[in-house]
Image (cartoon, rainbow, N blue to C red; front, side, top):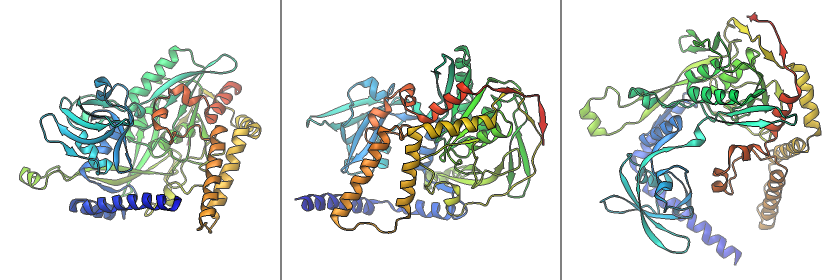
Length: 510
């Protein structure tokens, strides 16, 4: 019976895959070819088809026009995972998690069957301009079938934006926590002459709120922050420093330009810890490096950041195209091109090497081949001349003391010891070249992996990961709930609570 059911499941998935493969439009093959050619220059130069460009804009702005529902492919169907709070779908009230969307139509249009479409293709029918009506024909878990009309609106992807909260330490002190998921900026709003939402303004706002709470220090979390706007990396750095260069950029002709903080106003000048991991990249590395080079903050986290030290520009392929040609060829998408490398104020590139934290902690990512150095066609590491920069004269941590405190904390922490244990197991599995091919061996290996993951979750080792098994539940967690079992934040709070900051005189470093 087991083999019969397994064969049916695999056959069904394979048939669905081949069916979609045969339905791939000719243009999609061209798009993949153009992208492959672009990526042969370096991993961050790539061609964006119109749909990919739309996704990029959504990621950078944190908003889209649509209904506001998280969807997934499930056994050949498009299923609702959760309805986004504050969205048009939530306001309408009928769409629910686990609903299967069978077809989509505009207000007076014919329904389009999306049941066998890819998630990307289905979403293209569901999204649309604000104020327009879309009708979803859905099937409920109990078999009920209904048509749900929803007027599209702007959907704010709140997980994109800066968030903050106050953590109370054991001594009754207040520590501010700021999460920056990405260095976002709504560039499309700027092109239209409007002030778009951006990470700099949002971070300033959250810092001012925390200051009113009477905080004793700030933990700024850049873990899993893949980067974003270069100008905002400079501007956010400037919220914590009064003046000076933040980063250097060098173009293909070797011309170096120094980007400085133009705003002398310091929004927050108290003690600060910056959390990073191997998935913190690009703009995150610019910020973390500046804070480290100035002695402005204590950088804490995994062995190093991602190691992306390049700058890209987005070229609109439709720009300067005659209207006649634009009508003939339709939207041509965009080309993202690497135009510069960036360097720390101390002259070192973050390419490959990333930013090594002041306090290195055990991580489940330690033995994963993740980072720029493992990417095809990536550019080499190099250096430029250091630029003079004033060393931070305000409150700072005693580096030797906090490193010793961290070592003692990790040694006594069962959760950190569990991380070390699990990461060594992961390394061992990676080095194994033999894999089981018989059913008993496969089942045994699966059970061992599931047990290891279960133990890690129960120990709080994977507390900072998204709950893949229940994304609906994870999406409803508050920031405080997510931090409750975060051992890296716990250690940062411990250091903030037990390390008395030093005061040093201003000093210009070169």
